[in-house]
Amino acid sequence: MAGRHSATRGGATRVRESPDPRTAAITTTTADVLAVNDEPLRYGPLRLAAGVTRWNMSSYYWLAVTSIMIFTYIAAAQTALLTTVLGVPKNEQGGVVGVTGLIGEVVLIAVVGLAGAWSDRLGRRPIAVMGYAIMGGGVLITPFVGSVISFYAARAVIAVGVAMVTVMITAIVSDYVRNETRGKANGFLGLCNGIGALITFFVLLKLPNMFEGLGLDDTASLRATYLLVAAIALATAVLLQLGLRRGRVSEHSEHVPISTLIKEGVREGRRPGVAFSYVSAFVARADLALVGSFLTLWAQQYGTDELGLSEAAALARAGALLGIANGVALIAAPAIGIIADKLSRTDAVLISLATAAIGYTATIFISNPFSPLGYAIAALIGVGQVSAVISSQVLVAEQAPVATRGSVIGMFALSGGIGIMIAFALGGTLYDAWRPAGPFVFFGILAAIAFVYGLTIRSKIPNQPHEAMDHLDDVSGIPAGAQ
Image (cartoon, rainbow, N blue to C red):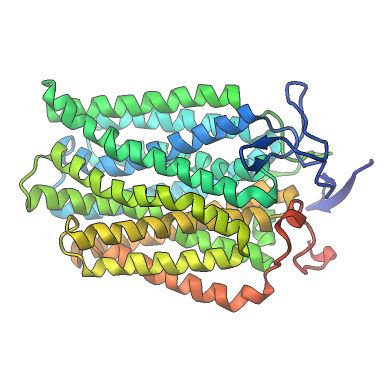
């Protein structure tokens, strides 16, 4: 078969795409416009992969805006829900937030590998659409829970959708854009994430306060906002069905078992670049969890206990603090994407991990999150979190072989889930028993450890011209027979 070769893994034969950059490993349909000439279709400064249209790319970036908008709201609004709907005492809320995060990460660990593997077989679009539908359904039922146990169950449902969408955020941008502009593409992703987060902090989190002004009570105001967010998620599922590209990333001559695809993600971890991307994900994926959950909890409790604000007003004030962090991230994201294209992707990750380590550990010096120092450190955390997420995503997209990219990215998300699970398992205890900065200091230490690990293997990670790695397959030094 011209332009392709077959490889045997786990007893199943797979047809892989050729490393010819003009025949990108994406199956096509008659509805797609193929860009198989020497000059690929452009989306601003981005060079799109074969078969990807500008409408596909625009739909993806809408996914980027709405996903972070919804993820952030879910984490930020839970403190108000625990107080208003469930009546959880404030001295127990850190533990509840920790358990909630732990449950979410256990679900994520169970789902992300399957989501990545299934997307290799079925295509990215059905996984993204299903993820939004599940997430929207979970958000819909959350404000009507009657106990902490039912709250945990609702959050577990949401976590299934979040896990599926999270894997697709990274996988789709890796598929849609050629490697030499993936840094910029992920920079735009960070920009869209920042816009989505700002919409949450400056619009969605203010809605309960606005609804109260219209005469609704605390519970009704919060429920109305949750219902609006659920509607956004479900509407986005419909848009993605219409806008994302159809087809698979690679063709298989035979069905490969899902267990084999998951094993591929683990196996590829023997590549130094893939291994470092997994480690960086361990730290980078904590950003929404730590900032969205514990920083919101800290700010809202300070607002009610020390400043005497109502729950809705404290939530709005907390949203402003988080808005500073994400506003700075919004500005920094495109620059970080450009840096990731100019430098080696490994060095970009190392710089990001160092910034994250400094920002997280600096929270130990804060007592008032609304002080000038609190805002300054929140801004530094914003830079650290967006740079770690963008640079690690670019690194894994570059280092993952195209034929198993979905599996590798599934394991990338899984590694992040494990890191967050560990952080949540100790973070809630540190928050209640030690100080509100505890979860951040702990993860700052983990970021520093990841930075040191990256330095030790830096020389072993392939550092080729970015455009030469569009179809990375055998540049790792792993003997062909070992794959």
